[in-house]
Image (cartoon, rainbow, N blue to C red; front, side):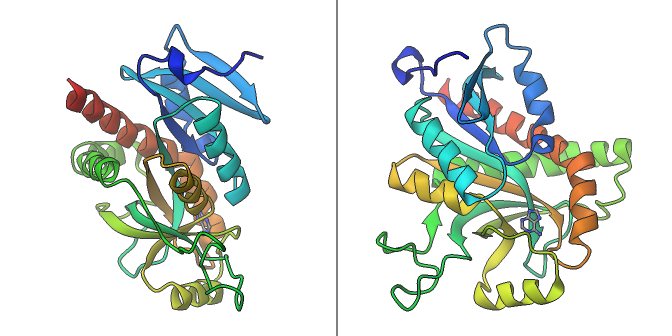
Length: 269
Ligand code: ADE
C-alpha cells in the first residue's frame, strides 16, 4: 500500500472523480492506466487512482453504492488526497416526465429524499445543518453541461450507430435540475409515484449524489454531478438498469469527462 498524496506535493490540487459502480468508469480507469506515473492507493477498502487524465491531475475512485459509501469517499478525497474539487459520474433512474433512458441529467441542486427527522426537523432537512438542498458549483456545472451537450450532439450519434444500443431509442437530451438521493433502489411504479409526489421537482433519483453534496458543502469544496438515465425507476428498472450499466454507462462517463477535462485545460491556459 502506498501512502496518500499530501496536497502540497501536487503542483495543482487534483480533481476527485467518483462513481459508484465499476461499470461506470471502466474506460476512465483504462485511460488513466496509460499514465506512467499512475499510483494506486488503497484506503478504507477502496482503490484511489492518482494520476493525470488529459493533462489534469485527478484522483479517480469507486465509492461503491449508497450515501455512507459516498460520504466516506468524499471525506477521504478531501482530507487524504487534497482534492480541490469533485465530480461524480454515474447512472440514475429518470423521474421527470421528459426524462428518457439515455438522457443526461446534470445536477443544479441535490437533496436526500430519505432524510426524515420529522417532527424534530422539517422532512428532508439535514438536522442541525438547517438545509435540505445543496447547490452544485455554478462554474463546474456550466462546464459539465457544455461537455455533456457537446458529447450528446457531436459524439453520441456515431456511437449509437456503431454500438446499436437498443436501450437508447431516441436522440438523448441534456437536462439541468434537481437530483434526489436516497439509500433505496426505486424499481416500482407506486414507489416512483410516492417519490414524485414528495419531491415533484426531482428529475432523477440515485443513491450517492446528495451525500457527496453534503460533504462538499460542509468542507467548502466545489462539486458537480452528472447522471445518465439508465431506467425509469419503475417496474422495468431491474431489467433496464443492469443492461444499461454493462453496455452504455462507461461510454457516457468517458465521453463527457474527457470533454470536461479538455475544457478545464483550455480554461486554464
Ligand atoms: N440508479 C440508477 N437507477 C436507479 C434507481 N431506479 N433508483 C435508485 N438509484 C438508481
